[in-house]
Length: 425
Image (tube, rainbow, N blue to C red; front, side):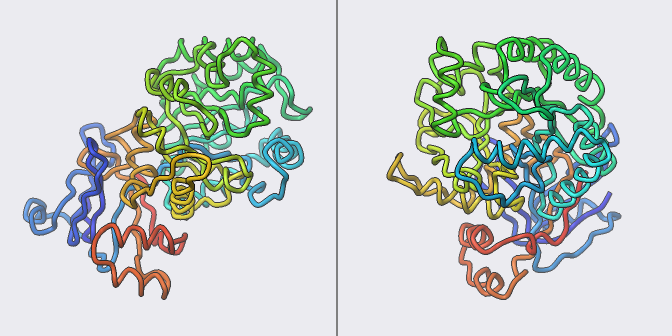
């Protein structure tokens, strides 16, 4: 068991409000099953007397905060980040698919997996919901590397049996056999989880989507991840391919792919009926603002999400997204929320932005009380933040009059230099 003394940030699981102790104590130790979890978190003056024999590391001037949760990221696109394109579909054809074809080589996949995890940890991300490629070995590479580091990782082999080039296109029946084998091999092993992963509806035949839905019913505790309503050209294409579906989102519902633990990236161009479907099924949106701005896809409608009331959290969406860094993602989400020409504009508060990338993202995954927070019983993933990591940030944070001003300064001016240490359970 070990204690850490510093300012402490955590969240109320019911309201999402931040709880801040200027002089806090975080105690990490084993639970009855031997997992390293939060044993206590709160004011130092209140808790320290309860742990007289525990070594406490003093971290003056630092903030202890939950490890960040990335709701949507493509591990094979680590080297695609920053590639210029005229939009989503040309970007896929010119950069993404050619690069992903290289993951047929297990050694190449293993090498990229190490770089990918290095970047996550350097940026304070301790849980990710990740796409691999259509090659089963790409899943093995990421899972093996994540397991070796003790990370909580949820990932899946991409399903794409049509409208995809040679090198990434898979075969319907074999893709489903491979998916089930990967579920049995990795789901629930240590801190790993599996996600059934149709790339997006236009890249999958009805037979492949039907098989994915059957696997989702057979293994109800696995996750589902895909993309929906990111780009208007993509939506028109989905309507041409599935003319009987009311909307793009309802294509997935028709194949049994809308339920708890189903995460759909983007959800930009949807209506209230779609939002109600998200709410009623328990599915969640992975809001990917740097990607949406980079590719010119559109703006997530936070007002609609709040009015209808469905789950959502933040995601980097690397490599369409332009940064692994959660501060950059939170700032982009603030921009997206404020945009008021194509949708109602809202001003997202810093506590809410932070919640979307920690406890809110955990809730979207169905892992509230497990990750994304520093309440007792949560897994012991946390970051040590230095609010004086750069001269300008130090000047700004020293003038913060309250928690909102402190958090917003970090969101606007912070980058990977703020992440002094990332600790995984």
